[in-house]
Length: 400
Image 1 (cartoon, rainbow, N blue to C red):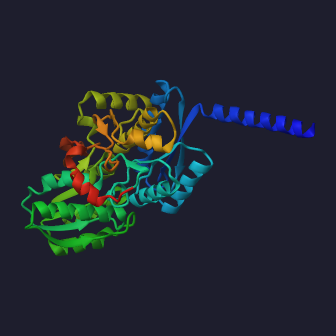
Image 2 (spheres, rainbow, N blue to C red):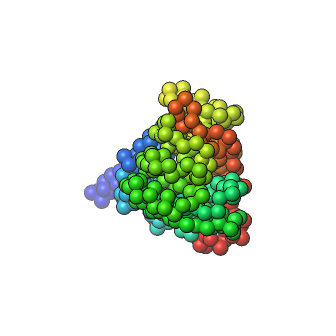
């Protein structure tokens, strides 16, 4: 009798556990990791973007009728902390997939975790080419246009400049190293007459702008490639303006046209730099108009590029989950490979061959308007037009 009671009790316990699991299964959890405390200028608008996306998704019925819940963690700008956060999200929170990350070294750390633990990871922002190529894996996809893509867009304009003597300034970590390497490669292929006369590698977030500007000036380049961003960019521009570094020299700059990096420059904004960015005030398409209207209605503020990235990351995650009809990792991978979807910049596709999305970027020039930095003469460059062919990708990316 005791044995029978034990079996019955155990059965009820299992049934209760199953019911509890079933109830929880009504929500689909996504894990999100980013450097909120380290880089608020980008990550706060990014958070607003993904929160808007969650609200829209759930208001329209969720994912196949299930509510979407995002569980977010701050990595503090440290790869080890990001991996710890990823482990907690997977093991304790039971998330269906991981999303996010900003810094390239952190994106690579979470991608490595995803590969080891066989967890789906949708990288939002990290730009190093290694995420989808040299260190790419079957579990990792990326939204933003990579360093290669943005470099190719910039080289299209930069190669037409008469300048032959070039210097580079970039933060000394994965993103900066990757950006300089691919820009130099693509630029030299188009312009074999170019000389690279100086490289400056300040530590990320800790630039000592005076010596950097002095060293570049001594090399006497005709043009400068800049890869610094955030507070480092402000310090570099201020010191460069003071010392006349940019006078009479062409400057090509990754990311500088993004509002989160232009806004702090105010009336110190240099004019005429060739940049990638986000001129939200001059984009006139139905897709962007709808996003802009919804964002401004919710936050009473204008979007930054981070807002677009956060919004589209969660929209993409939801589209992948909806197509998969499951939270099974292999089914999500199969659904994500080749999937197309709308975005505020138009339709994008996650390529099967390397898991890179075809989201593009705007290229234009910096200018001042009413004492503020703006981006002018901007044109949208479709990501698919700035990627190498399949044969080259197969050489760059390891086999799964």
